[in-house]
Length: 413
Image 1 (cartoon, rainbow, N blue to C red):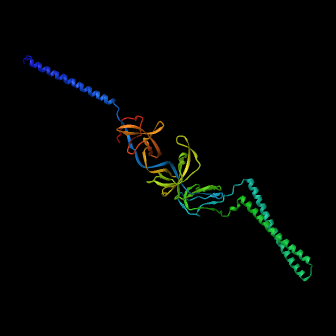
Image 2 (image 1 turned 90 degrees about the horizontal axis):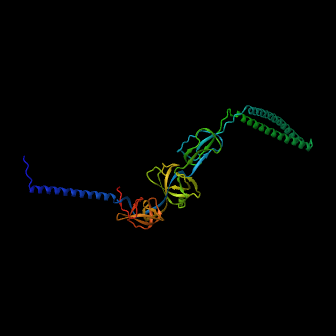
Image 3 (image 1 turned 90 degrees about the vertical axis):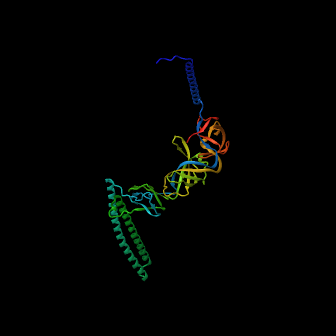
């Protein structure tokens, strides 16, 4: 095909097409540059800080002392061994009920100690001497019996002769005196035999020969009160010393809670204050009343190794559930102050700004630093006496990025 010659009209059409393409490229370059500039500007422009928001409100407020505590039986009885001896096995188990006066343990006398050969020979010799003494005392009793009988007969005969006038009255006095001496000699001989018998028993006790054919009596240890067995301190058979603890009794229905609080908190706690008890394993809180704040503090090392002065606070439960026992761990919240209608802010919104307390109030998506005056402090909320009004929005947990006048936005939940 032969090429057509270029005409002015054709050249103008080509020129217009090239001009349009150049302008399209220029506009595209301009639009791309504007888009890049917008992206750069938006990248460098500060974004609103995402924060959690809360509100100032009027509501009831409780000021509490929150500490861990432990349950204990109010009246605990420790039954001890009244004498030394051999304790028989205690069959009672923790949780079993015991009536007042019931036998809870039995103690038998201890068996005699083993003797070495020398001591045994000495004890045998003492036993032989005691037996001989007993025989001599028996013979003395026989002689004294014979002498007494002769003296009694002689005195009777002399009194008869004196009555007839055959002998003088002096003979009667002599006979009666000999009669009394014979009677007393017989009594002395009998006492001597009793002493000899006691010596024989003591010698046999040392040798242990008195165990043969004799029953060992045991002492019954009884319960002074009605209650449940809390702990069995000595269960197996074995020797015990006088005063050794055997078991503990108590009334599980009369439980109380011992709470160790800081001495600074104890100064605000008074008898009669209410206490909420949780964390004991049940599905509801228990209520109690402070019965006593002990006047003496003690030192305890905290988990961080810091010495703390602690005071024991005794709380009496209104009603103890049957599943709550002795020595259980609980969480106790003692209410030291209460108000039904006060202006409060969340405690997480309050922070220290130099020498004053402050909060960040959100106004038109801007954080404004507002100083406040605090009152009573609760567990989650704090009383505010001045600085804010009900309904204001606050920044919760303000970070170092939040400043006065900074743009903020609510964080998505």
